[in-house]
Image 1: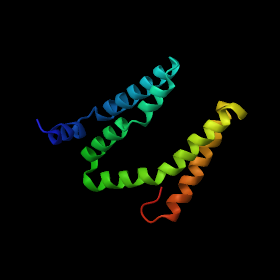
Image 2 (image 1 turned 90 degrees about the horizontal axis):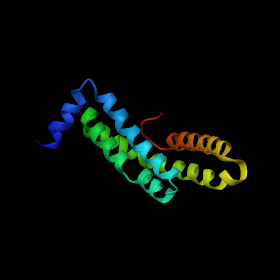
Image 3 (image 1 turned 60 degrees about the vertical axis):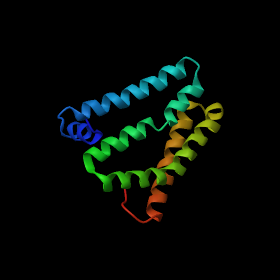
Image 4 (image 1 turned 120 degrees about the vertical axis):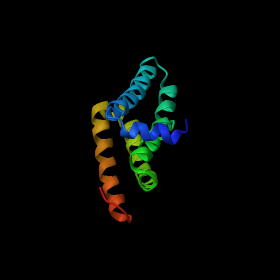
Length: 126
């Protein structure tokens, strides 16, 4: 069966949100498992491996088609610089101010930088 038929079936399924949740939760559990086993490099690799974006692209395509997929891809590029700032703040802050404060600070910077970027660039707004 062609991929398009599977995607169309998934998009029409009443359980699609449950399936999406299970896919995302499984990836998150896998990352947490490897990190807890002292395999931070593997955990980080899985996190940044585009598996989640591949699944996201496929599901967004199934739900909304080409235009929606293109908009999502462009939006990912816009949010990459704020994400890099977030990770850098956590990296630099975890040993200085602790994990919770560095995560909160990183998240606040991510949100502020994201809003700033999306306001400066043309296209749909948050």
